[in-house]
Length: 102
Image 1 (tube, rainbow, N blue to C red):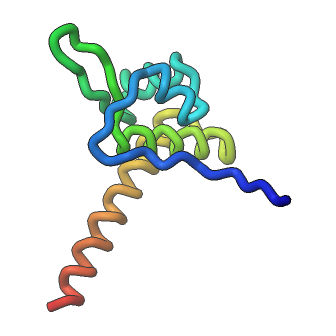
Image 2 (tube, helix red, strand yellow):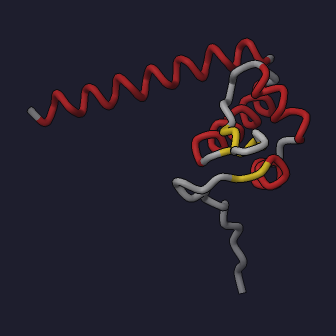
């Protein structure tokens, strides 16, 4: 019998605690906090005490950051630049798709 690893896909609209986010992404809690401080990801702060939580977009971004760090040994500044370029690429692809439908 063949067993396959299934990557957990975060659900839209669901928020995850720092601990769960660490488990889902493989990033340490410290690394996630550093990514927040460097504005590579943006947590959601839950009332009334401002508890930090992470959404689907943050989970995916952390996974991408961890992959870039592991594969290319990039520093946070380089990762931030690449993340910005990837965002711009996504925006341009979306705009191109819009214009192609017209």
